[in-house]
Length: 175
Image 1 (cartoon, rainbow, N blue to C red):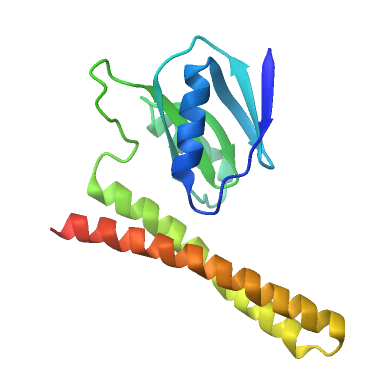
Image 2 (image 1 turned 60 degrees about the vertical axis):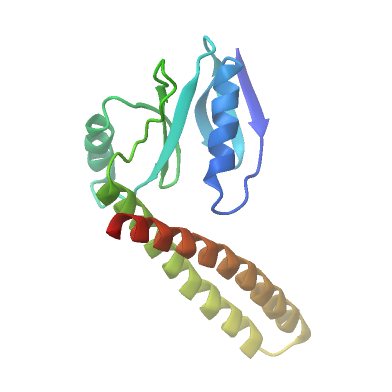
């Protein structure tokens, strides 16, 4: 039996999503796919697992690179992807110790750098889009430009939170 749940998680707060998926596995539902904020699960034996996600942008040939990447992460079970986000799970150790997909500082930094590049590119797009809407004449363009600026401000707030987290990880590595 398949179960689907519509759920929206805020911007860059993947910890809440991770916790949700781990709780679902404890209830006996394993993530199968994600499509537009709808999570599809299949019934499995309830277990205590750790979910992790990775952010990858593959150059062409994408399918071949994706296959190589998934075979590289052999201990983890690939469960779903949504765009550049790839979700994995692993059964937790009996002693309850934490396991991580990123087992060293270099892999943690590379993960954060990949995300930061995309966020910066999207930021440039938002600024350009907002300015073009404001420069056009007409009341509709003015309202759309104002709305676009408000959304851009919220986006930059999330980017700043992410950048602070990035700096914290970087400082931990350097210490």
